[in-house]
Amino acid sequence: MGRVIAGKASDMAPGSLHKVTVDGRDVMIVNLDGTYHAVDDTCTHAGSSLSEGTLDGTSVVCGWHGAEFDCTTGKLAKFPVAIKDLQQYKEKNKGTLTESIATLSQIASSPATPKTIKKSIADMVSDLESGEYSMAVRAANAMSALEDITQDPNMPSFVRTTIWQAVAKLEGIKD
Image 1 (cartoon, rainbow, N blue to C red):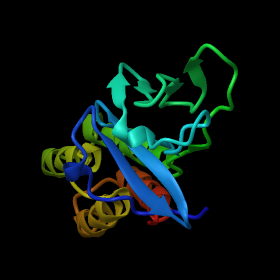
Image 2: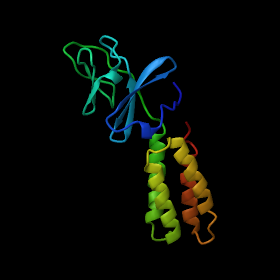
Image 3: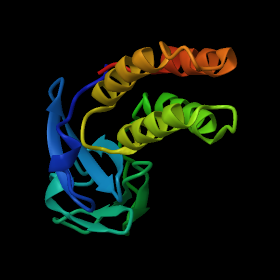
Image 4: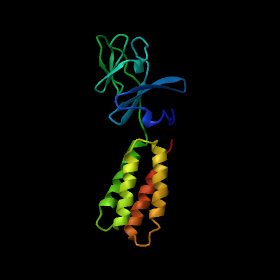
């Protein structure tokens, strides 16, 4: 399964369960305090839609017979008989985005970075951390802003080089 846009983060409130269909397979998206997890939506016990169940901490409870699955791993958490775990789908761009944010945060906190650039980069880090748009849109917006920032003639060359490293990471984030 390739990368899939499941919807807007702003439409998926924390603690909510959402069903999407990808390549003919029903997938449940769970927002656990701003971290999104995707697992099969079909209960492995009797086939019910888990997105119609309830969320209990990090577990989804099937509305038919009470099977509980950990939303972060897809593993069966609780049920009287052994049944199969759910398939888990990982967000591939999350690590790359986290690395880029760490690199930009280092630049923003460096005493060698000019104040105007620090402010711009700190604002950009906030935008990258927000869930308002998809990761690819946030990355593209950040790359555009970073291109403008690197044109500043007062920027030390090592800061410019570090920014280019962040841009190279952000370029890998695609929908």
